[in-house]
Image (cartoon, rainbow, N blue to C red; front, side, top):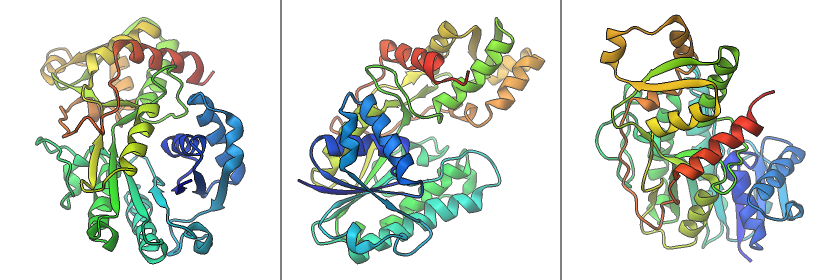
Length: 352
C-alpha cells in the first residue's frame, strides 16, 4: 500500500485523484482549508463520477491545511510519517483583474511554502507532484516545450493566473527536490467532466463560458453571437478521468522527465465547440475574424455577451501547440464525448 498526501483536496482534480487512489487501496491524507465535511462530500461525488464505491471516502484521512504557514498549518509528523507521494494541487484559480497580489500569495509564495515543507520533512524515497497548467506558456507563439520555464513578464500572459503558475514553476525548479530528481510537474489542459457520462463537478473553464451563454440564450432565444477567434483556434479539453489515469501512471514511473504536458493529442476546434453548444441551447455561436467585426460591428446584444465572456474569449484568439507524448496524453475529446459534456452540463449543471 502506497502513501499519498493530496493538498487542495476539495478541488475538482484533487477530489477525483483521491477517489482513484483510495479505490486502488492506497493510503491518502487529504489536506484542505475547507472542512472535513466539505472534503468528504467532494470526494464522495468524485467517486460516483468515476463509477467507484462512494463508501471508500471513509478511508480518507482529512487534515487542516494552510498555504500561508511554513509547515502548512498541520502536524507534519503525521503528514510525513512515511515515504509518500505529495500532490500539490491547491491553487487560486481566477481570471478577474486586480487580484495579482492574492494570486502571488497563494500560487507562488504558497507553493514555495509547500515545496519547502516537503524538502524539510519528507522521508527518503518520497516524490513531489506539482499540478500546473499547460497555459502557463502564455501568449508566446512558439511551441510549448516540456521543460522548466524561464521567468516571464506579466504582459506575456492572458491573465495574472497564468503568470502566477509560471512563477510557481520557476520557483520550484530551483529547489533541492527538483535538483535531486524528486519532482514531477503535470501541466493540465482545459479540465472537463467524465468522458463516459459528461458529468462535471466544476464551474471553471468551458463551463463558465457555457453558463454565460446559457443565461443570454434563455433570456433572448434565437440570437446570433459572434466571437473573434484565431482561424485555427482549438481548446485542449481534457476529461478528468483520463487526466487522473495519466497523472497516476506518470507519478509512479521514472522522473527523468520532470515536466509533462497532460493534453490530448488532438484539440477540439472552437467551431466544433460552438456547434455543440448551439445544438443544445437556443443560440447561434459563430467564430469570426477581427476584420469581419470591423466590417460588421457587433450588435448591442453581441457586445454585451462578449463583455460577459471577456475572461474566456482570449483563449479563443490563439493557436496552441504543446509538446506531448503518448504516455502523458489523455484520450482526445471526440464529437460524441463533446456532445456528452455539453448536454450533461446544460441538463444538470446549469443554475435553475
